[in-house]
Structures are given as structure tokens and as C-alpha cells.
Length: 554
Image 1 (cartoon, rainbow, N blue to C red):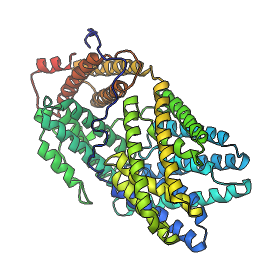
Image 2 (tube, rainbow, N blue to C red):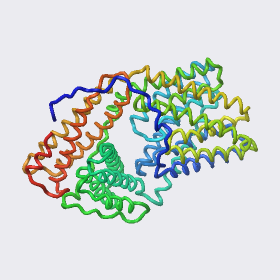
Image 3 (cartoon, rainbow, N blue to C red):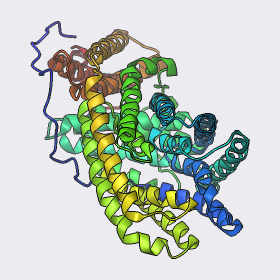
């Protein structure tokens, strides 16, 4: 690694972006899975309660049903475990909320409990990387439960209903395994191949090549984690592993990759047809396995301390501000604040703008739909199902667009216990949204994350160590194949972590300047070493040994 330490030029504070915040992106490739799953999870319990004349219990039923939104990108064996923990986490949050609601009528105390729950849910969801929709749904469910009239005698029954619908949501999410048992792994491998093809299109030097390379390595890492979370190796998994190796090779040497072939392989992974056999240059390469890249859970908790503090403080202050304004549902402001907190200040600001715009438009949609919803209880249930489906269809395009459906759905849920005056409901929602967004963002700015720069330094050191270890193995006359493969994968993971850490820190405020040039130098030398390693493994055409040694140097 170069010993040069260029003078950093990153300013301590940055302008808040507006351009592109509301721009629509491409929809998720699996948008229909959470959309259909949540409808299938909500509809049977809701219509059952409708038939029993107990729509007032729909809120507790939806607590479990909304767990169907999670883990759709996980292989089924891993999905089963993750969903169990999601359901248990939901029950834990709802249980604490219901007990608190039954023991005290103090709104200040309830807001405080809700803020602490929101912070815990944020940290656990981020540390475990549970994926979308993250902590927001759990916080919405537990916060709403805090302000539901409750007695201790009712708590077991309400929790039992939530547990039953959570079990139904688990079955709904696991049902596709009967038709396409390797679907998630195939999608993860296809995403890695397409990302590698995108980087190959740049030739490693074209416009946007650094961003394409980072996206490629992130997709490859996600593919390995998906494959390694499955059970015993199968023929399908081994074939998918070889395809992911092909994606890695393309990232190491984009000028020698065939983008068209990579995309063709990715396209062939759709459906349930056979996985294409991607022959590798050496037989030994067939034995290459992914190296587990996930860090222990405890090591991911420390960096989340500022996020936990921001969430607890922002949610509490937002709830208190709503109470001070006389709003009857302070949990709306609390949930708004909880939904804002992202990896850094810049992303948090973007989410705040998206949340306010989406909620305001959503209130207008509610105004248009409320006459239809008030036609009868069945119409109310059908409207909620339609908005829950629409939210999942649209939210992957941009968060604000999904909020256009989430907002009227949340407003309609409050009417299961009885119809309310639409004007008052809409005004309270808008005020709580604005209050929650403003107070939540101020809390994010107030709670600084000065350790972001330290994490960049640690990521730089880790990347240097990984590169030097790989280079030492390359210098040996006959390195052990699995040791070399492990070193190559470890270096790829270290470089991916370095880029993610640097990007997160770049959007943070009130910190010392970041060593951006050192990061670029570390990435350049690391990727040269990756290319030399792939060549040494026989995954790339041979080159002159002197050139190969030069590639491995910083």
C-alpha cells in the first residue's frame, strides 16, 4: 500500500441534496412477491374477523400478517429461520406495548416506551440485516399498540391473535418453495451476473466504472451469502456457485469478460429450467466454494450506536411535540421519525423529503377513497387490501411513491374500530408527518457520528491486510488452492466493505475530512491484486509472470 497520505479535501458539512430525491427508479424484480404475500396473509384473518363481527381486532391480526413482507430475497431454509425471528420480534414489541398501555394512561410515558422500542428495533434490524421493510413495520405495529385501549386481561388474547396470523404469514412466505425450491438462490446468482456484465460494459475505465464495480462486488457478496445459507450442497447449488465465480472473474478482469454471455446466463436462471453449466478453465476451480463473509453480530452493533441514539431521541421528541400540539395519535409522529434514519445524514434528509411528500399525497388519496371505504365493513377491508398491494408494488420505485399507498391504508386501519371524521383525521396525519420529519431530522443532525472517519480508517487497514496477505500467497511457488481462494474472497469482501463504509461516511456531517484519495489508491491496488489472483488460479488467460507480480503490488 502506498505510504502517501494525500491532503484530504472533504468539507466537514455538506449541502442537503434535492435533485433526484423524488426520481423514480426501476421496480424490484420481485415486487410481486411481497405484494401478493401480504394480501394473502391479511385477507383470510381480516375476512374471518369481518364474518365474526370483530373488525376491532384487525389491528392485532395485521401485526402478524405484516410479517409476510420480510425475507423474500432469502433461500427458503434461511427464510424459515428469519421469519420465525421476525414474528417473535413483532410479538415481543407488541407485548411490551400492550402491557405498557394496560398499566398506564400517561401519553408521555407511552411515547417514551415507543421511542425506546423504536431504537431497539432499528438496531436489531440493521445489525441482523433482515432487509426491507426493516424496522419501520415493527415500529408502526408496536407504536400503534401503545395507544390502543387495553387491559391486562386482554393482552394474552390479542397476542395469541397476532401469533396465529404471524404463523399464517410464515406459511404464506414458505409456500413458493413447493414450486421453485431454489428460486432465491437463482435470483441472487442472476443479479451477480447482471451486475458483473454492467461493469464489463465499462471496460473498467468507462464512465461510472467505480460505481458499477462496487455494485458488482456487493451483488456477488450477496449471492455467496445466499448460497452459503442453504442446506447441504446440491447439483443446482454447485452449478450456481460456478456461475458466481464467473461473475467474480468478470469483475477482476472486465476487459476479458463477455457481457453478453453473462447476461445470457442470468436470463437462463429464470423459471425452473436447468442451471447452465459454466465450465471453468481448471478442474480445481470446480471446488471453489464461497467464503462466509458475514461478521459476527456483536461486531456490527458498535457502529450502530449513533443510529440508536438518533432514533430514540428523535422518536421521543417527535411524540412529545405531537402531544404538545394536542394531536390524539402521537405515534404517527413517532413512526415518521423512526422511518427517517438511514446510514448517514444525507440519506436521512432524502428520506425525510420522500416521507413528507408521500404522506401528503397519500392523505389526498384517502380523501378520494374514503366515501368508497365507508360503504360498509367489507369495502373497508377491500380498500386496505388494495392499498397494501399497491404499497409493495410502488415502494421499490421510490419510497415516497409507496407512501402514497401506505398513508391511506394506515388511516383506514384506524377506522376498523369505528368510522371517524375524515377532515380531522387528515389534518392530524399531515401535522404529525411534518412534525415527525422536522423533529426527527433535527435529532439526526444533533446526534453526530464522529466515528464515521474512524471506521473508514479501520476499513482501509483491513483492506491493506487482506491485500498484503493475498500478495504473500501469490509470491509462493505453489500456494494451497483453498488458501488462495479464501484470500481472494476475503480481499473482495474487504474492498466491498471499504467502499460501503466510505460512501456512508461521505454523507455524514460534522466530522474530520475523509481520506478519499487513500481509499481510491487502496481500491486500485486491491483490484489489481484480485486480477492477479484470479489469473494465478487459472480463471483468466496466463500472462507474463513479471506482469502478474507487478499487478499484485500496490
